[in-house]
Image (cartoon, rainbow, N blue to C red):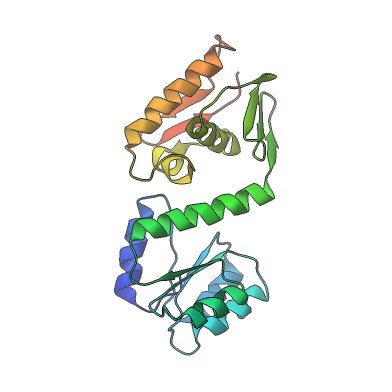
Length: 220
């Protein structure tokens, strides 16, 4: 996040952290540009009114070396600023003030689009995930999943053998409302387990991780 309003930056950071979104903040644009050369980030939230250089000038500097998604977050709601920002390579434009819940939704939407573009199909020995077709084959049998169940199982497949928190499952799922209870994740996990066990009763593939969430693993 490149934002010179420290108080706003802290508020947004704390809010986004609730949805398993880690934020690194820079109050000055050149510090933000420097961080981009040192670390890998998934997305940038960029203010326009910044010290030293206008945010509209920062966008082409980012685009010169990176295709990272950019959400402009600015109190400047002039249509000209919005048009220029989008023409120069921003992916979205949010006039301040806005509800942080909308920011979460926009982040999720952009990251889903990026993830689908780079990983249309993921296979393992038992699970085959086709993102474009939105289907999952388990042990050579096509699973009948609801949209939310597909989201959850695909996230677990993409993080196979690694623990995934309930919050991450909630945040990354396209068809689960952000205001849904974490307990809803447990209910849907139970349904997915039941569908897997109807094909293979001998093994449990989705295991709980105490204090964290769940992981998907191959049978032993």
